[in-house]
Length: 611
Ligand code: M6R
Image (cartoon, rainbow, N blue to C red; front, side, top):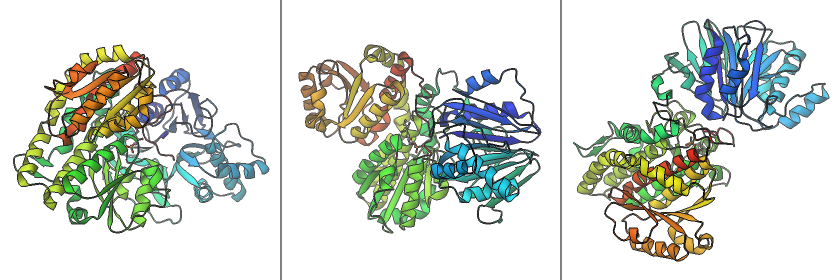
């Protein structure tokens, strides 16, 4: 959460900072600010989005070729002008942008107050910038030394970029748990929370590791760690199509990303799913396959939508490969003293690869000796660098805060993994394996068919947009899809929604059923179809409004449900990939009709890098 961008070189810095911040805006959009600092620093910041910052800066002096910028997701203090970053130290020597949380800020603040410091904002960041200045002035030392010393006194997480007004022409960056990547150009450097601001600007990047400190000048980059002066530089190529940052003619990124799914799923299995050879090849798992096959247990850790994908993974792996699987919220796993050890395989799923709880769960599992694998969308992310092996989802940049194409890509990877494991372990026959491979290959075409009915979902949304609450029900593979449908609706339309296993309805939620409660029921033709028909009758008897998602050709459900959505028929293991699409579309259209900010819903950020 929070996006940081910095630049030092010979180009005008302000447009680069603003463009970079726009690409990072998904990380937080409560307030924004920039500091332009070649000689005398100019700081502009305000509450609101980047467009509000641009409006407030219009006509002001933005000349300069070095600077830093920040887009904020508020942790400590309201999203107002004063709490916006950059923050300046009391005597004006330092300017700083920060992503993360300084956990011991109140202790440090009290100490600084005892030494005469006063604070303008409610932020933990202002404490850090003053701590740096205090050490700098007291020790009569260089800026770099003051930054490194200050960071040894800090508990918590940070990605920071610091400017010292006494040492112009230099940016100092450091990270612990909050990502930072350095972009390397000719006589110029960028620094950013992820690679998106660097796309189209540089070809080479360095992903900073925890405890790295970078001293960046126009013609020199020095990378150290907090503890040593040892440089550790590993260059990576950056290859991102800047077209990914356009809305591509759609009104919102979310809609673009929903419609991209036939292509993004194809990209996920490209070169991995080989229908001609009846083969699945997951290069990233090649070396760990024997250990994965022998695993006594697999534990999947994730958060939010990725956790829903993990639940589907549990059903898939147990069903197809007969390996016991547990799925855990990463935030619970990391703190509940779990039993995990060398016999286990832990799979961490994360779109961003930067979710703080998921990364902490990964570290815990690795320390306990488990083999840790990652399923991740963002190349070079912390997750991809901290796991033993893994599979990229290759869904392309997902910018809408509500996850859509990343979810279907995760499920696609999990399907391929489960099929491969099932075949290797002998729980799937060659024929079954080949048949599933062929069916997965045809999923993008089935999704195209669902998307072609967009108008139908628009009308459905018109009919249901004003209901204050929804329930989503499903069984088996469709239960996690019900959870995902509820999450999509609540996070972008602010309508209360709950997902439940359909049979659990009788144990509580049925008390909510009346004519004012729309119930979205996944009633696909699987082994619990008869049971779900009974559930539908029970709901109808309570006069609730039923929206049923069925397989094409269903003749029973249309007699019971108020509205029926038909999706192509197929094997149950692919249910999630198809059934989630109508839910994404309904949530999207309802959100638009209710005037909500679809791509940047209130209080959320895409990448949750704080606990
Ligand atoms: O980047 P991650 O997949 O680790 O993110 C996990 C969740 O924060 C994320 O899925 C969140 O729930 C989305 N807003 C859901 O649409």
